[in-house]
Image 1 (cartoon, one colour):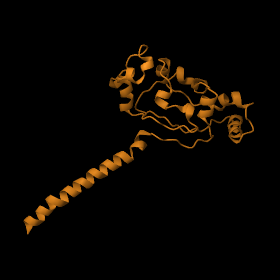
Image 2 (image 1 turned 180 degrees about the vertical axis):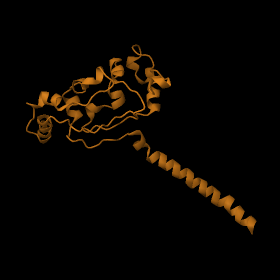
Image 3 (image 1 turned 135 degrees about the vertical axis):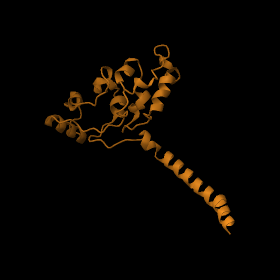
Image 4 (image 1 turned 30 degrees about the vertical axis):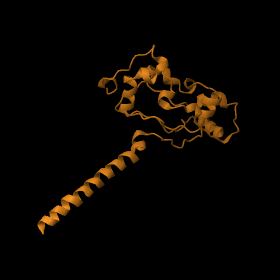
Length: 190
């Protein structure tokens, strides 16, 4: 009798239990991957802003609004005063521009929700990448075609290392100008 129970446990219960554990792990891993990687993240912003219109149709360079991108680690999020360079005249009767004007007149920053984020423990410098000629869309996707910006690429260590180690494959148009990026730990973990 004991041998039959033990045989049943080893032949049926153990494999079923192991299968359920592996299946649960695999499902959890793949279902939660976009959340872990941030891919698809597109929070609702306080002002509806179309990169497709501004960067795409109107061809406004990223650097006009994200002024710090060539000089500092951070691209900076535009202040209301940058937006008002055009919107004191252009389309000022539209509801979203009226919201923008109220932020500008009150002297308050627009509480934009950050979309692209490198973890706090990793050092990243926008200016180094931009000044080497690496186009913003290599990391941020083609925002000039996005009405609502979302994260389209993973900002994991593996993604960064893949580009740093294979820059010539990833950026063939810059193959003569750039070398592979650093891939030693302290380049990013400072």
